[in-house]
Length: 368
Ligand SMILES: NC(=O)c1ccc[n+]([C@@H]2O[C@H](COP(=O)([O-])OP(=O)(O)OC[C@H]3O[C@@H](n4cnc5c(N)ncnc54)[C@H](O)[C@@H]3O)[C@@H](O)[C@H]2O)c1
Image (cartoon, rainbow, N blue to C red; front, side):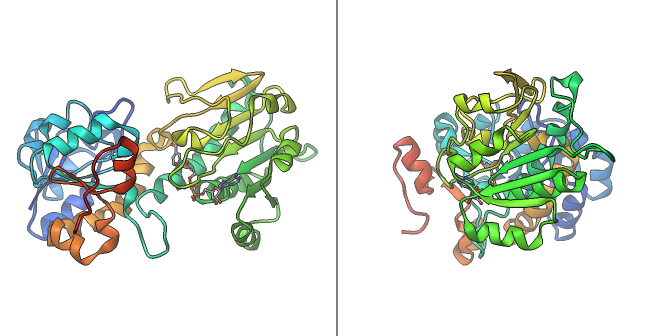
């Protein structure tokens, strides 16, 4: 198979769909790997490393889209990429079709096979190609929150870890899933006092078993949240209701309970945010202040730490790219239901029900 890796073209995106080691493993199995010149630079991988791994460097994206049987990317195809997608070509990347009708219709018209990272499942009912980016965002949320608590960045001037003789900072985490757990580890590691809230008692029980002593679990309800807003220096929004917009857990009038210079990092902003006053920001302009509270709401947090994110993402995606190259998409989908779940569009047919419902388009099951 010819496998292609183009440079990501979405604004502020520095990740790449494959590392040199991925090219090496594919080349070892006899596949041809084409990498666009400079594709890995944003994540610290040079063309020479891909060449040493057995890949061919090509000068432009057109050389990839016109030749590759399988294109491995990170972000959804951009308007300049969609017209280059070919019939029967397998495109393996994040698509997030439900959020973008134009992208959906464009990809259907191209009759490519769209294999979406975000809907590939596993036996535990989780989404293994989404998890690594939630882990990155969870850890980063505390790092960013700590920074914006610093006075020169608009915060109240609190050091999360405290020092001898001065109490540590207070971190309130809403949601104890992947993002929330990673955030709690990070905040606890810094020495902060941490409260993590969830509506799943099972989840809280599990967290209670393995979290360190400076993390307390609390059942999430509106009163419990309100009561801790004055206490919190940093609030991290990490809730998810699968398939729905994030629930609004902090309303505008609740901000008056918070101290000026406190920080909210709403990681759930990609699902609309769990704070009423949250609106998407970018890495270039990550924060704004409402009622004295600093809001950080970057929609693609992992992009800030592209090298770590690329390695984390490709650790999870490479085994699947190898399987697609080895068996072909059709055979793999027929033998692996988790992989079949990732196929959102198949040669002009929309095969993902929630996406079809989101846009009022016709759904056709992958296999009738
Ligand atoms: N901004 C970014 O760059 C970025 C990156 C990765 C993930 N995310 C987002 O972060 C959010 C969390 O992702 P995740 O992987 O941790 O999800 P997850 O499913 O692992 O965890 C979500 C948790 O929220 C809990 N929850 C639901 N309703 C709640 C409520 N009312 N109060 C308290 N807890 C509640 C659930 O019980 C669950 O434990 C998602 O919206 C995801 O898309 C954003």
